[in-house]
Length: 113
Length: 113
Image (tube, rainbow over all chains, first blue to last red; front, side, top):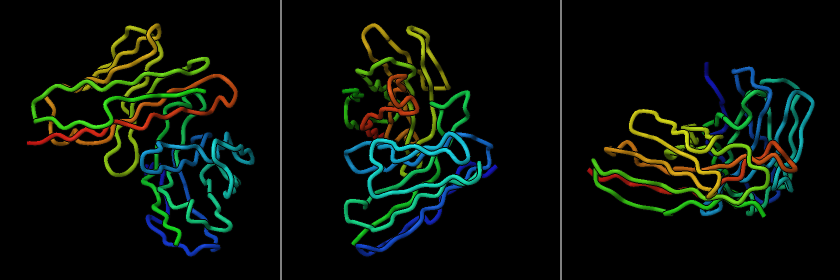
């Protein structure tokens, strides 16, 4: 099993550009999450999904969108990139029976200039 | 407001030392407390604690929860350079958005040979 995979590993965007961060898991986990991690700020939940077709906002959803058309994939969309979105983004997944035990992908380091 | 506070924020020890990392919390409707290790990339799961006084152990790492005093400790004995990492504490709450974990800022541990 590859676990949770994320692409790309690194990306530099200009202000106003859009992009999609990809996340996939092969563990058949229903729950998937997107976090951002900023220095000195801890992990913040952006969006989460409890299954295909069901998504909900986390603590910091502004400026982002998600979709969940399959169990495996949970892409995160940035529509109009801003410098405040410079961060490391982590995708995670968990089983319904153990939602707190989350398995993380390797992260995407995004810089918006 | 729910919060998780870890201490110390950082420390440096010599190989072979024993360290104790602290995590205190104020969270509505506590569900679980988790410890993760983050070595430059994705956080990896260490322990989940739900009951007071029951020690969880894995090799040289152990952890215990005190739900009366609202804290947990993570002990690492006979530290090795490979233990150098940021150790994250997170608490699950059943209040409101019950898929959310509240994350601490982490303790950065450096182990010198």
